[in-house]
Image (cartoon, rainbow, N blue to C red):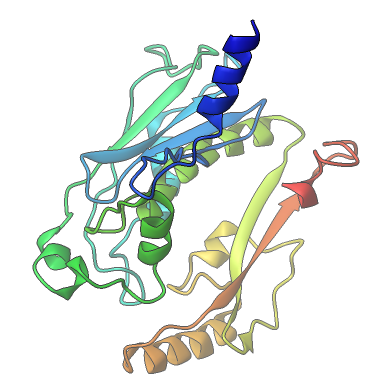
Length: 262
């Protein structure tokens, strides 16, 4: 027994060499507990999607309802978004019966990539140099490998799974207490919107212009600033304001399960 213990200590005390393999787990692809989503897929892979677990049974929801939100995030809609041209047509693979009623089982949704152009990344300096303002360098430092074409999981295309799952969540929240969640661009660089009533603005107001700001005059000034910066080959930041209406008191918990803790 003493020999075994000493031998074990000797084994774990060995200092690994510089060439030793270090296993780094890839995590952070799931969110939520009761209503849990796990997104998957890379920007230039076969497709991207989400598995949603925790959706209650007997909720009526159609593919068209989910497609509405995916159409709102779809690239190539205007000159101030990415020019990638994707239909982003969603396929629901599980979790619904033929009458479009949820079964209470995991809902899997897939959007196939159609317009990925890997040659734009692999046939120039981007295959050896990190792109500024992207996650390329950080991803490589963490995992020792990266998806050069499109950025892989660090691409904005990953958000498709969140949007698809969010469309289901929107339906459930609407059924429960008439909760409504809306968002809009409230600031671009130093230009802030000035005439938005958070109690009354609608999604139609938000979608009335390509900036997605429900204040038409401010939206026009924001667009002019974006165009000005875009012509210099640069980019600028902004602020998105999210409004939740009809939220009942008592949701969440006072410490780690409150909105500010997520």
